[in-house]
Length: 258
Image (cartoon, rainbow, N blue to C red; front, side, top):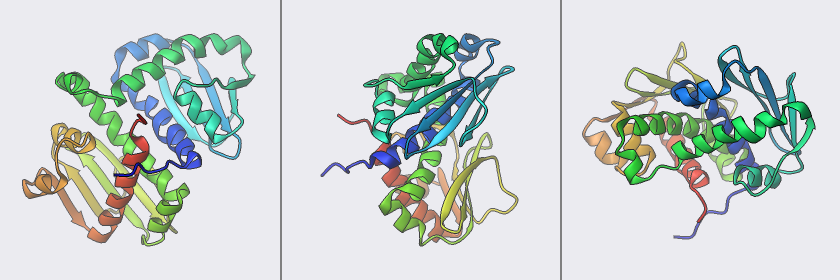
């Protein structure tokens, strides 16, 4: 099968608003990372010329992520989406425009954080046999995938074509009763939120982490999961079908180039 060509503009949005954003969840799931940051308060602003911008903030024992430009301690500039994507792949460095005295955090602690994130998002069969690793991988992959789906729908040409077919509404995805994320469709633009909306138009429910892990890591078939009721779909099914098409396209973006 011919490999899909990744649009660098869309990939930059995915890398920032889905991959880097998942550090928020990593911070809560991995005690070593939380201990590594400790009591440091630092806000890192990412700005990609002709691309996305967002703030990653560590403050008072919490980690938050905000799209757009905000008050910051460190400002990292990238001349293009390709420059940013290369940084994610370890092939280039950002251009620091502010916060030079705090760059040590980026080269040490933040570098450790991103390597730990890659460790969890690039699983092997052996690693997935470890129950704790598999759970963290599943949670991170779950939120990363649905955040990335929205970036594909909003910026990729094929993704935007699919989004044009979507009616306004909320689609909720869950793993058991623990993990919840919903996609809001409004005027053919998609956005993710943690939690459950007041009104749900469609649901995608993974009964447990094992099922979600199999689906997200392509080790089980969706139809067999539906047949065995490990994956439950309800509500406005056409919305779920179009989101599934976007999710498939998203998986192509998230796959590591070889």
